[in-house]
Image (cartoon, rainbow, N blue to C red; front, side, top):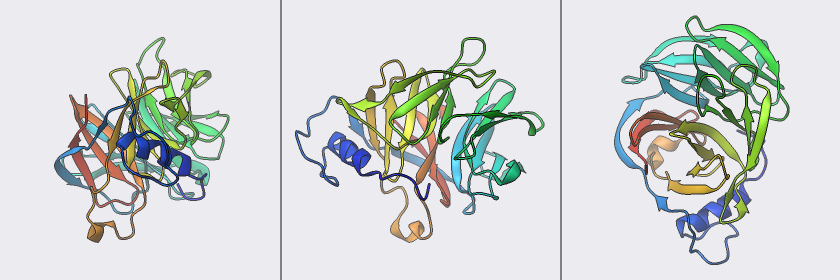
Length: 264
């Protein structure tokens, strides 16, 4: 997301995790979090005009939230072909951000507009706007129903927990890798009680234990796009769990969704 805070600290921490030199990286490269590369299994076309901020598969439908002020949408896609099934504009010129399905609702964040949007999943009708504190970046659902928790990132190293019915904040956890904070956490995907997160302006994806905030895996997703296909694209941003250890990965204005295998 253009105009956001420096990513240098995150890049340094994550470069150490991958065991490679990075911007300003020093110290012992031995870390407790395993590093991995995604195994590419195939790809699906992706709309080059979609500034992807959130991505989630549920019930055979791929949901996508897109950004940019005045151009943001909530979209339904065919996960097999990438074809747009239907879309609705985000109201009031808001800059749309991460999304998550929660029962018969879809929650969508806004970046600096101070509200979260609750949509009816069946009709894609906007139900209400709920005030929020701080910025909205990524969002995922750790578990539906009573007692469930939504997880929100705000561009810092802190994850925030929200009630899925009211969107009231219920707690926070600070994300660390070997004791160091991991800032610029972006798009989120909750899978089996863990949280996957894109790290803004890097090709890194981290898996987080939401109970402790500790990073338990680091994925280097660089090289998904060839240099020829990278012209005009923005950052890696978009994780959707397909089942088992398979996921879709994409980015803002990317020409493809990549079906990959990530560490379980």
